[in-house]
Length: 437
Image (cartoon, rainbow, N blue to C red):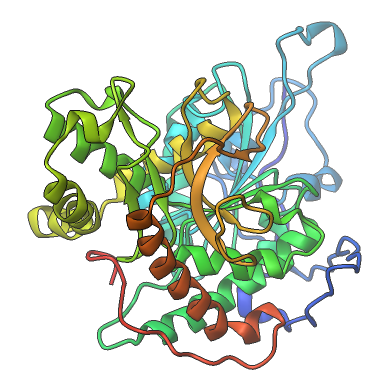
């Protein structure tokens, strides 16, 4: 393999707000890929080895080759010159994974799981494209250095940048973690608007430059409505490809059921989180199973199931902050891994998993045109179908209607960001989960 020179010309960094907002395209329109123009700035080395320290065992690349690797970092600027006869049958094409908020605590756990092969498999090389901001860029360089020092054989490329049009180019997975946290005294409607603008822009960028079949997982809160905003601004990407992360809620619910039943949590299956990632979410004990039996046959304390169980799931994040002084970054990263693996590995027969997905065509009677957490199954091809044979009784239906009403209210609150007219906010109450305010 040959080493390319690392002192490449640098691009002018662009922030999300540096590009004028494009008119919202209609669902029937086709948006061509964007041809980007760049202004070359004086070189800023984004590598952990200075140019005069690089020794090439073979022929060196010329400066003219440099633009091909402008955003690469350190050892990841290496060019892998695999000859045809060196490629084995097990060699796979790189998967391009874009991550926003890549310098944050959640990403600091997640990126190393992705690089290790834990998510996509031990024979699947990946490329990480990491999006930061001017404020976080130095920390992002530190993250890249740690990835460099970890010597992951499957991690073939790492690129860092502040321009989403560069970072999201050809992305096959987009993990949208970065979002503004809720400040003291901030109304929930204001948070919806501020973060909604971020996800509207990211939807437009994905629509312009990402793979046409990119899978998008929205983590930044309020994640359900942010996912709706994102997909509405990306009409050329199937709406089915957008997910809002509710897997951490599912994992917490499984843990609480296991604790109550006195079993290990791998005995809990068919756990569904319905609705919004908020205090209106519905952890479903009616369809859940323990050792293959309905939960209500194993846990006979109906009062606990109907009241304390839901409260425990909702307050888990707040209790963790009280104990540890920080939010649940590590378990959130694990839940992102679980969410991806549920899409790239076949769902065990008879089981399902939770994900916030687009409701059009759902069989449960949920209002259409919102992002609502529902039970899903996958063949392992990155796609999913909604689960069948799901029971909905009057108690569960009443709770589903409440979380549905909240998501419809949030949708009205961001109508100006989804191309549906003027916004009207009539949010009934503050339902942010404890620990996420």
